[in-house]
Image: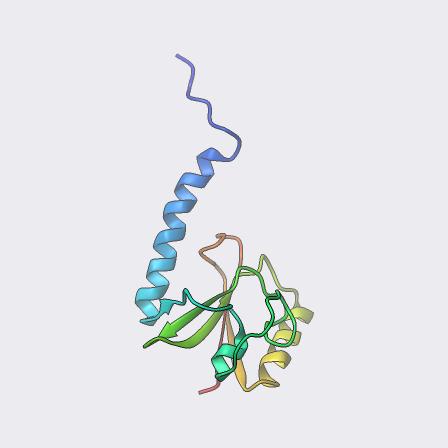
Length: 127
């Protein structure tokens, strides 16, 4: 009997969807944060400012920004998360410089929930 045929990529989407949800839920549980559902995902929100323009990168979004989200603590923006597919050494230096110029800091992890091959970058106020 022939095996079931799947549309291209179907075999990988189902497990990734489960892993994606589990990874995102684990991030929320580990940090105690909730994903923001109101407003633009923008680093200005970490600094108590409003995001005035929807854009991917620029004054309020860091270099390499892709798949952004804001995570809240007690209803207030605490961490800006983005998930680029990669950052080369020059882009990492540019990101660090961008954060330092705004009183922010960043942390880069190897695996994101958006795509297991992407990076997870967290930007937050300096402590």
